[in-house]
Image 1 (tube, rainbow, N blue to C red):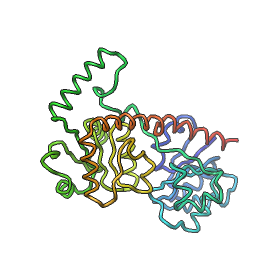
Image 2 (cartoon, helix red, strand yellow; image 1 turned 135 degrees about the vertical axis):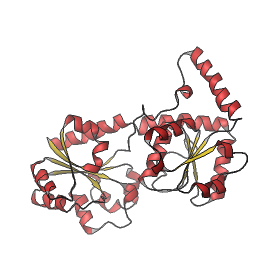
Image 3 (tube, rainbow, N blue to C red; image 1 turned 45 degrees about the vertical axis):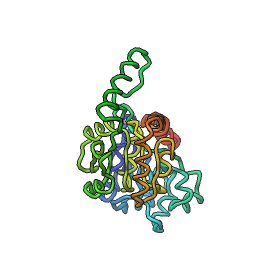
Image 4 (spheres, one colour; image 1 turned 90 degrees about the vertical axis):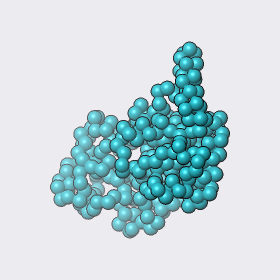
Length: 312
């Protein structure tokens, strides 16, 4: 089976690439037309920043070509253009991170016209790469477990004086230092801007923290930050938002605060800082949720299953 794929999706389809003949394409190029003509299956992202003119033409001229669409819910506008509606209804399968959102938001019109085409597959993460710091992981060996408990007590209780480390993701560090910073927490708060950190530094930042605070919804990057934080066993504090509400459960893996309500955000931070038992329980639940819902290996298997359905 020959598959052509939106080049932007390629990094998330490594397993498929190893099993199938998969050609990455820029659908804005005329050369894509020739590749699509020779393919059996087209994998595309929607909405896309690039023109998909040649993809539309190819699908119109070759109606037997099968189409698999990955939706990006964070980038969907309130109203779907007519050409995009036709494109989505033309798809054989539509993969959506959350079907509940698809049923009630911008995709609702498409979903209720063809619910059989939709498949829910949450984003996946490499759970070996994004993991809790080694010293914080539980051990099945009782002696090692006790030793780790002593080490963690020294590092988290004595050195930090009982206060957790808080990692804040924001675009304006000075503003949030003024909003959140106070004498009690200031020494335990550190910041980063998504664009300023490479992957290694980012993972280390997660592993050294206890609480992850996402100050606003910045689209896909915010979703990725939250899922990465869950995988690293962090209690999450995030703004309540339709696209974020289903990533974790309030009062289980973290807390939601009212968007743009700084007092509510500070209240949520103080609540978790003052309740170590609750914080540690959330940490365990976060990692468990990542393993059960955002496991990249499970995601790859689900995508492969859909491709095998379309091979028939």
